[in-house]
Length: 418
Ligand SMILES: *Cc1c(COP(=O)(O)O)cnc(C)c1O
Image 1 (cartoon, rainbow, N blue to C red):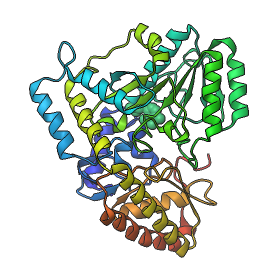
Image 2 (image 1 turned 30 degrees about the vertical axis):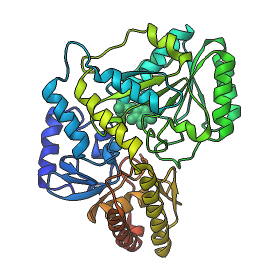
Image 3 (image 1 turned 180 degrees about the vertical axis):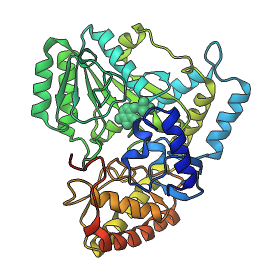
């Protein structure tokens, strides 16, 4: 709960940080009792600066696949820090990590490393343009591919030129895909897709085989490259590229978030077809070759290969979903839980301005569970049945409290009619 320390930090931040906070880390778009600042995190738990503890279903907006402060992964990071991190050139770990990724992700025969997911999507875009000597792209309306000028979801600070040549389709809608590809004509460099629809404010759904295959066929036919942006879904859907579930291999895939359990590293993986473009571009960053995050990533990939984390995430996600459905019904709420079980999106029926969703999250927070009213959530492998039971008992109480107060709820400022 936002307490006195949080409040005072917000006041100080308002003076020295533009807008008080920026991007998705701003708590301004969340229910009023949500804290802005956190003090520490361990396993599935997160503590705010006022000492309140939460079971965290955001997992740092994705990265925490094995839970916060994972001893094995963090030891790999710390050990490498003592040996050498950001040096004048890369360490041997870079080759080892590229070998590990290409051994795990079927479509990939090469890897490039960077820091943020936005770096990875931008490198993939450049590599596709370099290879095809074309510039247009096709992407789905509402899909997030990062916060660079070309991909930023808001127009502020970008120019129309930054977004020139972007043609939009509707996810899973083959006719709209064909139309967008047609509009790009002989300038099409890439088809960009998220592995499933995980847009904010919306129900999530998986790709159809037909849509994925049509993306593949159209890329082949036009000479464009097919890019799957697995920055968010990567390793919570599959131990391979997420489109392995529909049997379609992209030319490149973008990775970040989970791949080092919170340590800063992202990646572009590609096939032989995409190698020439990737080999020809100039791309770099001061910290991209740092060895410690690579050591953390190697430790994370090993856990992905050798543990049953994915099966456990699915089992716990299913348990959470069934338990929430039951409790919502018991209190006469109708909720939609969509997406892969390890990445739930929970939206309320008949809630056009999301006020019921905000109300429920606010009640959950009071009971020590951090959920989100319109962004998909994440389970981590640090959660056990004990934590799921904790979440469900908080949910029971939250639905009950919400039932009592639902008629007095007001829309969040973000949705209040002007
Ligand atoms: C988070 C995200 C990005 C951008 O990653 P950053 O590390 O925030 O730059 C790109 N694509 C998707 C699908 C994401 O979820």
